Length: 89
Image (cartoon, rainbow, N blue to C red):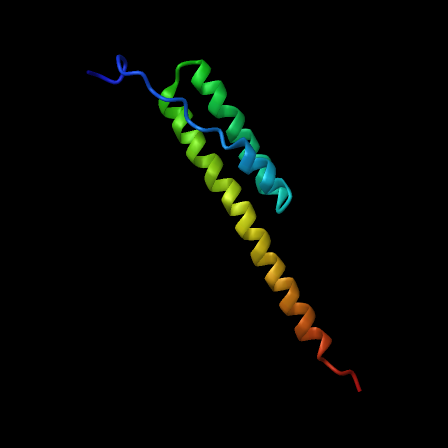
């Protein structure tokens, strides 16, 4: 059975993850949202491989946005701690 005859499951667009990632780091989340929309667009055009690639890229961008926000947060916290202990005499 070739790929054209086998029914393929629609790739997940991870919209829920994209919405959550907007709370953390919106610049990357915009790109994730764009890819999430492309998943459905490609699927409706029967472009299965691009739809799967867009789905994978969506989850990568959304998770990257969440991780990046935590990294930035840790850097800010450490900077505040570091510079609050400096005494100016």
